[in-house]
Image (cartoon, rainbow, N blue to C red; front, side, top):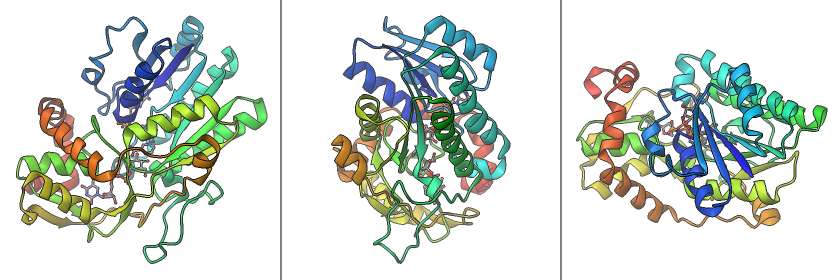
Length: 341
Ligand code: NAD
Ligand code: DAU
């Protein structure tokens, strides 16, 4: 079994590679990653010299290079994590999101059609459903909820989902899709809420909360997401979409306060900043389908997962200090202003 994991030098993809190599030691895993600002080769150091692991620096939009790699490796399964993943960056510069998230997915699926594949799995997001109101806690996203996107990022992911389903219907490509809620855990790039707040709090820097911090996200520990994808690969039905989420809704401000408490920092670091344009109010996944059909349930409780995550960032300061020393500083100044650094 040869498994292609695209975007495997990023947050969820790297966690997935570690998970799969551990769970399926007989698999050969090939990581395809362009190493954009969000990809970090040092993350993969623990597996880099394993016999059954190969890293290839490649752009998923590069048709020729992708075809060559498919011809060489003949993958059985492709799991596509590669994407531009940060909503705020998509608001600043949508075009790279359209290129990677839509054209890159199409390029991979064309290679799958050409060379044959047992499964193409598209890693998607709950953001394709848009948002839910704050005053209707009875509402959840199901797989039947209409696509209704807010940002260039979510629109590009929704486009890729529609293309994947079209390739299944038109060409019979064996596609599955998972739409997961917000992940947290080790190796998440510090531009995202949880690692950004941990890193800033550890440096006693301001903690920039958008608007009033009342937006709600549904948080899932990254390993539970990896386990869900593995289950979908083993037992999922082709042509199907599976929502993944753990009924763990939290307001942003409560997460930031919790991080302050765990790190022993004062809440006076919290700074309310200008809201995100088109900011989605609430995400909440109904995971009934994956639970009933595949027996998936999250295993990590939020209070344990967040402690493990904070501890990981304390223990791996070198990993994120290296990241925030480069391009990230320019991005940060532009987003939040000089006085917030
Ligand atoms: P990430 O930004 O941490 O990692 C993305 C990876 O893709 C990086 O290693 C980057 O180098 C690589 N990449 C980008 N463009 C590429 C290209 N053209 N060719 C090859 N590689 C390229 O992202 P993440 O948070 O790990 O998210 C992974 C996937 O999961 C994305 O598709 C995202 O939409 C989806 N997702 C993320 C979350 C979340 O909470 N982070 C939740 C649900 C779904
Ligand atoms: O729901 C799944 C999605 O979750 C994934 O598809 C995306 O790839 C991933 O980035 C994430 O999107 P969000 O926009 O929800 O995540 P982010 O960490 O950027 O923000 C979480 C919430 O925190 C959101 O309401 C905005 C807010 N926020 C974020 C940042 C970076 C702040 O208040 N301050 C900040 O500095």
